[in-house]
Every structure is written in structure tokens, then in C-alpha cells.
Amino acid sequence: MVNRANVVEVEREEREAVLDVALIPVPFVRPTITGKFRAQRTFLNLDQEIKREIGRMGGGILSRVARSGVEETTVNPIRTARNETDLNIMFGEKWDEQNGLCFLCNGPLVTKSSNYLLQPSPDRINSQDPAYSKANTSITHLGCNLAKNKCTVAEFEDWLSVVRGDPA
Image (tube, rainbow, N blue to C red; front, side):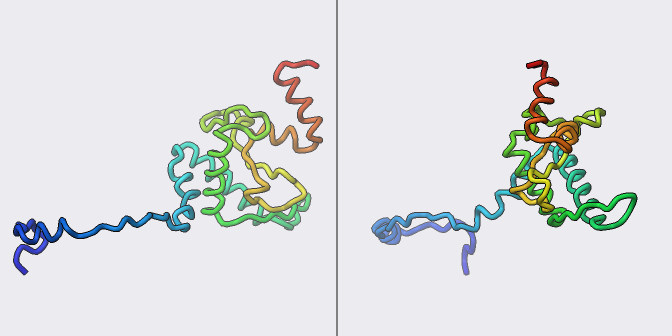
């Protein structure tokens, strides 16, 4: 073929024939599968420090899942979780949904702090449910997570009010 993949001059008759072709608009409908990768994109677009914290949280969950039912000084509770990639993607979505704020106190989550209590922590909303699922998991400060761990929601909210300086 002559001029393959190059510009070719169109003769007058050809040009007129092409311009006379009737065009029929076709509505573009985005395939439903395109939304399938939204969660992965959310995770990939996060700051590197946030991804590192998400990886640490996911690794901690998988470690607890691996120790489920193993006798030590106590028996580790049964917990379930997805694989590491799914956990990272889930936490990327959670971080985005929570706007980088602690689910419990609504304070900013930080990725670079030497303060142990400020590190992001995965929290099962319903502790009776062993699953670290999207519906049952949030991201909190470790301090907030530990504070609410052995008390009722009302007791935690009372504690939070005092910590914030509201003595009532």
C-alpha cells in the first residue's frame, strides 16, 4: 500500500462524497464495569505516607487473623479479613470517605507522629462481628480506639468531652 499510515491527499470527488455522508449520533453509555476500579484508583491516588499507614494497619489485621484461636496467655479472638490488597483498597476508600479524619473523634488522622496514640488504627464498629469488612471497619486514632475499647459509646463520648475540655 502506498502512503500506509501517512497523510493522503483526498481528491475533490472523494472529499465531496465524504462530506455528504449522513452522520447518525450514537449516545455513549459508560459500561458498568468502569466503576469496578474506582476503589483501586482511590487507594493508588493517596499520599505515600497514607499508603504506608494503610499497609501497617492491614498487616496488623492479617497478623491478628493468623493468630485467631491460638492459645497464648489468653486466647486470641476469632477474626476474619480479606487479603492484603483488598484491605489496602478498603482502607484507601475509608480514608477518602472519612476525609482523613478519625471516625470516633473527628480529629485529623496523622501519618508522621512519634506519638503512639495518634497512629491510625483499624476499628471494628461492631466488636461482636469478627469481620474486618468495609461495613464493619473504620479508621480511628489508636488512642480513641483504645479508649472506647472497654466502655460503652456513652462512656466514650463522656471521656471525649472531658478530653476536649468540656467538663460538663
